[in-house]
Amino acid sequence: MKRKIRLSPRFRDKEKNCPLAWISVRSRYGDFAPIHFCIDTGAGYSALTIPIARQEGITYPQAAVARGTASGLVGQVVRYRGVIQVRLFDEDFTWPCDFLDTAGPASVEPYGVIGRAGFVDDFAFCLDKPFFTLRRRGPMWRRLLTSLFPPWTPEHHFDQPL
Image 1 (tube, rainbow, N blue to C red):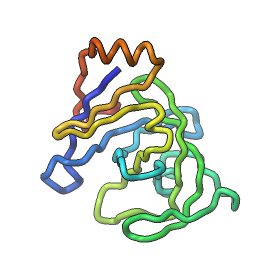
Image 2 (tube, rainbow, N blue to C red; image 1 turned 90 degrees about the horizontal axis):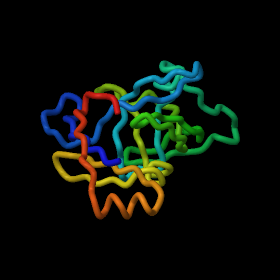
Image 3 (cartoon, rainbow, N blue to C red; image 1 turned 180 degrees about the horizontal axis):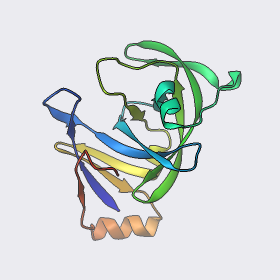
């Protein structure tokens, strides 16, 4: 299965150059909460701020053994390594996630980051303006078949949930 996601504008920016998408994340109540995520090919792990996790009822580890430091372009912050369970295209996935002890940037709408860990095991991806294309990795015979006979690729608007 291959899906094309139209690149979206950044918050309060007119340029369409950001792979933002609504992704459903399982909450502690068993339902799925839609959260805005940026698919970041440069991030090693997915990340979600603790305030967003609390607001949406997503469980995260609070033990000292899960505590560490996340480093990025703008500095370092305390993180708790856990997992998130996401639903994409009617299929459930569990990926490692850093829960960041920060409020996040105050100037933009809050969002999480989907990093490479777990994500690249389940999806091949390509960033080619104006689309971000995802293809579900599967058995070898299916990959061979789809490379010989590529399926129709449905397009998703950046405002629609995956």
